[in-house]
Length: 315
Ligand code: SF4
Image (cartoon, rainbow, N blue to C red):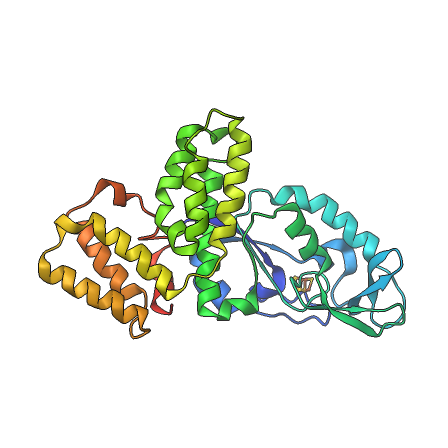
């Protein structure tokens, strides 16, 4: 187990912490992801002192802002939640990602109902109070709602971002920052960047061309902001095809004519949606393993996360 620290809404682990004493167990989280991630669970409502069971709460909008109010009545839990958020948020800096429970006025990331002062639904574009504070405090951290992980593409993208962000936090951020660390990180993730966003890929290379013109910290801040923005972009089949063809160029000498032909056919079959990404990627990895090219050895694009997760079987 790699033990990458990732936050999670406690009810997703099957613990009975919901207002009605129930849970929202996610087997994907507890049986698959838990083998590779070290979950740190937080139930903001419970830990803010609301207890289990507790009255259901929702977001209400007043002239001075949003408040967390009991759905029946006017009991206000905003200050208790804010106190908990102020205390817990600085302790989450070591997390590499966060999985939130949807539809909650505390944990929901998007489309949360906001009520008016009379308790009637006024809009549906709110964000849970804890989730909003998390996204504001850690804008680079990959955050997803558990329900969205049922989508193969979103799931693959989220896990890929967690592993890339972990690499940054372990090897470049904070005291590890150096020109070398930054350039090596960029080198490791070049093909991933190319697949996710060719335009950001083309901006980030030149950004690292002159690391003496201003403090390295400024450059690295700009870099990681753009890097994570690129990584959150969906990769089309055409973009993967483009990245794989670039990779293939480096493997020219380690592949015979027939191998090259098969690989080209499988990249084309992937583009047409006939085979998943794992098929051409495995051929590329075989070629690299047969006659390793140093430059490719470190490329995270070939193995962005543990194979056992099987994520490339479905995209
Ligand atoms: S959604 Fe959040 S606040 Fe609600 S039970 Fe789950 S962890 Fe607790």
